[in-house]
Length: 359
Image (cartoon, rainbow, N blue to C red; front, top):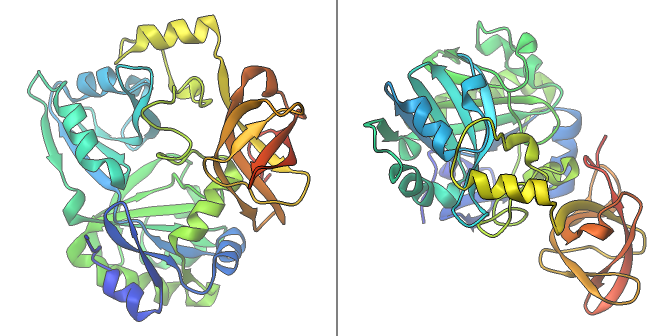
């Protein structure tokens, strides 16, 4: 099992550690609900150094990205980030990812931890025009500082005007006395905040500086458990749960990152699917009766016919109700439709609602 540069720090802080995507990761420190509230209302720090980072460089870097990703990366400018996915040949998704444009000939791709090797091999097979590729995942640390007080808590550590950074942009600058740090504003919690990318050797220094600067804002370390409840309240997909090699981006509601303005892997089949109409759709639902939906629970209609499956579910701390995501037959995907989640074979009533759950 791999460790991040900060694993010993989490253990010293009393984190409950679990294996996640091949890494020893903190799932919680003081409890998921408390950590969730810290991020929603204040500021918290996630160590997400298990994520993967690839650098693509050269004349044909954009061409390669355009051919393997569903979104239109030609729309990017220096310092802009784009959410996208890597479609496979069968209508599913190899992974979802972020594309960072450093300049017109250099890009950084940020991929999911469990898919680093898979994504590297997938992209490499299309690299027939000599794009320089570097997998910097093992030497790169990544902290996500999330919450409404994040900008205030971090501002003393950098000359970059954090409050004025637009969503899905990034800058390279000095942070906590370390040069060449990427500071980005993408976020996976819906609470605002920043991601800080830097070399592993600076992890201890940057971690300490963040917690010192954030003391006045009651900054706290946050585990992956609260990261999951926060992203779920926003209706953000988690690879391996809500999207995978068998789910189409069109079915998953990711038509907005699937641009048919250029050819990409399996684009003609996905375009045909969009035009013909999908058979199933990823929806959000909230429980009407008591019960917590979990991954892989079946979804039924009022007559007991199975119409779909839960992909993610939890008791949402900010909403004080149970919510979930899942694929259902298209006829049952309209907002307000009553469905039933089979919890230990008992049908428990729920209704379809619009994303995000947390407004």
